[in-house]
Length: 231
Image 1 (cartoon, rainbow, N blue to C red):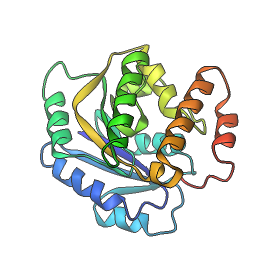
Image 2 (tube, helix red, strand yellow):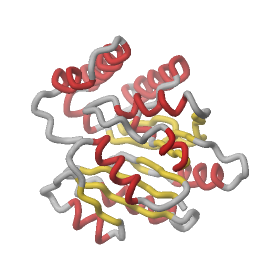
Image 3 (cartoon, rainbow, N blue to C red):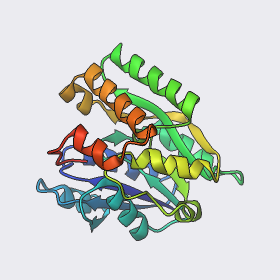
């Protein structure tokens, strides 16, 4: 069984599509769906419960919500997903195939894909593929599949306000090989559309470079958006 953990904050519009994808995946692999809500006011919890997910309330903050979901979920495996991604049929097949063998990976991510017009889409996807090849750092948007015992061994997600996905990847990479599944997990381009594609990409790159240089996650979060209210 896979415990699927989805942190949410006001995702009533995006969540149904992902939950339908997971309903189809559940035909191939037993799933325990856990939606961890950080205080939504738009009906996210009702939407998740109506789709059969186990809804857990947690203090707002992606890392805290992910850890709370991991604690509540059942299964030998944990799959962490953003609420605005889509688990395509190709992803479903790749996941089922990966777990259907004795040499299943201890940890894995999907390839990165973003829902943007051609041009920007190819540029961002190429840039992320280059970053991952050079530095071994996938985006949180690529999902994270990890065996529970390995997740627990690294202590879960560091409960920091930003860069929790980078931090856990670094911890995991010291213990196991993080494989890339042969399918792309499609993530929404809404952040790029809202903030401007180039501006948002450059901001993400700058945050990563500053984090790598030792700037604290607290300072980075305040610089990114001192009034942030969403995951």
